[in-house]
Structure formats: structure tokens, C-alpha cells
Image 1: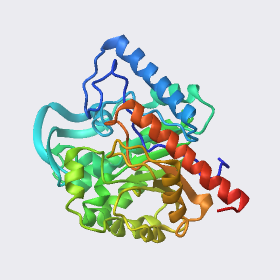
Image 2: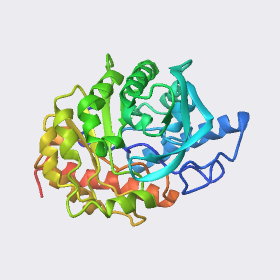
Image 3: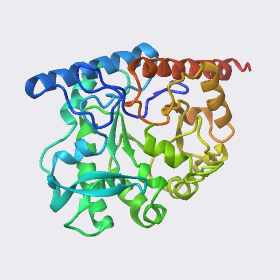
Image 4: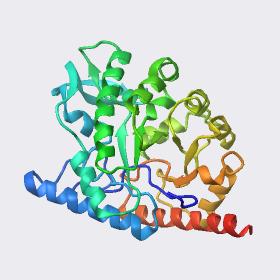
Length: 345
């Protein structure tokens, strides 16, 4: 893709109210059976249309066919019992009731491949598909079988690699692994987290993104952010490791966060997917605000390696707010594109 500053969303978009409860994570479906399949496909079509209408360059599915960015993938694997639930602390932040690993985990059949083929049919623009990363998957489970975070992560990395290869064959151009856990479990990231991520991406020709954020705009996350002080330097731990890794693109949160922009210097040479849209606020960014966020980053990343994006997923927001934020992202990128191509400021 030769577009300068190609815009992209991280992952989720709000679901239509006829499909699932609005502004809610893990919202149960309002349809079932064939009606659910048809409904999720209709929602995916709408998500594509809304991205294109807003001027987004890299098209995603908006995660319309899944309830949650981690558990929907896990639901399709054997070795995990969703009836046996335990309460665990997710990313050292909040308690959640999660399924239990009761045996060897494996993927009997593709999880998202048919959905990805459907997305591919909707647009001739580049498409991106998000998968949970190995470390974030193990953080959303209670493990009674392997009794080792690292062992389970390697099993998941192999399964993710199988899925990613089939997504690539289905026409997906960019595969994104979501690893918010990289901002929490720093020792694990260093010891095996990045290596497991590279295993998940092994042998792929598609562009590989790792998305590391501070989470959706839900109360547990905003409360946690309030404890992090004036400067959020968590990326300092993972960025040097990722800079040396085989991962192509690093996706990070920036706008309205306390992440010092100079941390991007630690991943110089990589493509940067920069969050220029705040997902924890209903207020709509102006195009000039977006352009400012992107412009400031250009001190640490070359323009041809900058991908303007959202901080995280937009699922918990009202649909009209999400749409307006996408338009702002696109318009802000346009302002900076114009400056860079004409040399004006």
C-alpha cells in the first residue's frame, strides 16, 4: 500500500443495537442460529461501509462476529471448559469469571477464516484481521492442565500461527496480535512473551502488527490509568525487545494518554500505528487535534512508517460517536498528508 499515512482502526467498532446490547463489552447476542450468522454478516457489511465512508484506508471487520477479542477465539478451541469457571485477576486490574483449561489445547477447525473471506469480498482495499496474542490469551483463563503460563503460551502461539496462515490464504493483508498484557507482565514479556509472539507470526508474508494499549475505555481501565502518575513509561520495557524482533508494526496508545512520545524512538525502524483517537471519551477530536498528535510523533518516526489509528477498540462507545471519531481520524491524517506533500505548515 503506497498511501502516505494510511489510516486504520485498532479492532472493534460498536455493534448495531439489533445485534447486541449497545455500549457493553461481552454483550450477549440478541439473535441465534441462522439469524445470528446473517445478522453478524450484515453488521460486518455496515462496519466496512462506515469505515470507507469515513475515509479509513485499511479496512477491518469491526469485530462484529465476535463477542470479545479474546474469549471468542478461545471458545472454538478444545481443552477449555466454559462450564467450569474460576475468578481470576485480569491484567492485575479487575476480577473476571473465566473458563478453565482442562486438557491439551488444540484448534480442530478454523475460527475466523470464513468471516475473513466474507470481509475480503466486501472491499478491494487492504484488510486487517485481529487475533488475541498468546500472553493475553493465558491471562483470560484459569489453567488447571499445564500449570505453566509459558507452556500454555507456546501452545497458543502454535494454534494462532495455524489460524494466521489460513487468514493470510483467505486474503488478509495485515494480521494484528492484541497484547495488552505486554504493559503489565514485564518479566514474562522479556523471558518468553516476545518469542511466543514471533512464533505466532512465523512464516507469514502478511504484515504483522502487535497492538499494546492501556485497554478499552471501561471503568476498571480508567481507574488503573489514574494510578499510573504523570508519565506512563510501561512501553519502555517491551519496545527495545520488539525493536529487535521480527514484528513489522507496533501499535500504541498516544492521544490523551501520558505516554511520552520520545519512547517511540526505542522502536525506530519499525512501522508505528499511532493512537490519535481517545477511546475512553465521548468527546470528538477535531481534525487539527489528530494532526497535532501525528505531527508530534514525526520527530521519532519517518512519515512513510506512520499509520494513524485509534488508541484501542471503539466497541463500548455509542455508534454516532465512533463514526465521528473515524471521520476525525481521516480528516486529521489528510491535513498532515497535505502538509507533507506540499511542504507547507
